[in-house]
Image (cartoon, rainbow, N blue to C red; front, side, top):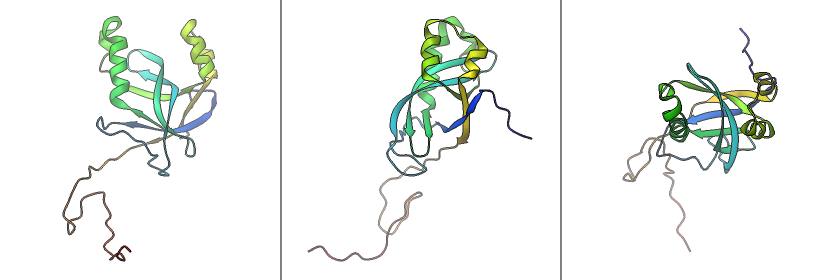
Length: 159
C-alpha cells in the first residue's frame, strides 16, 4: 500500500524526535558532521484537536537534510499554549506531519490560513528516524562500556 501524502509539496527532510531530555545532539547521528540550529515551521497533528503549525528551533544537518526536534521542549511549549485555552488537549498524542514554507507560516501568524492553502505549501516528512543513546562513562581500561570502542593496540611513545 503506498504512503498517503498530506502536503502538496514533495516530501522533504528526515525527522527524529529526541526523547532523551538530558541529551542534546550537536552532531548529526547519520554523518557525524556538525548539526546547526535552525527554525522550522512544523505541522503537527494533535489527537482530538487538529493541526497546529509550530515554529520550533531544531538541530539540522544540511547534508543529510535531517531535523532533530527535542520532545521535551515541544511538549513544554504545547502545554503552555493549550493549558488555559484547551486544557483537555494537554498530554494528548501528537504526530509531526511535515514542514510548512516559512513565508506561509509567517503569513498564518497574521491571518488564519485556509486548510487548502496550508496543504499547498506543506512538505511531508520523507523519512522518520529513531534516535538511540547509550550513556558513556568512565570504566577501567580492561572493561568495555556499552557504546564505546576502545583501541587496544599499543601506541608509539611520544617524542
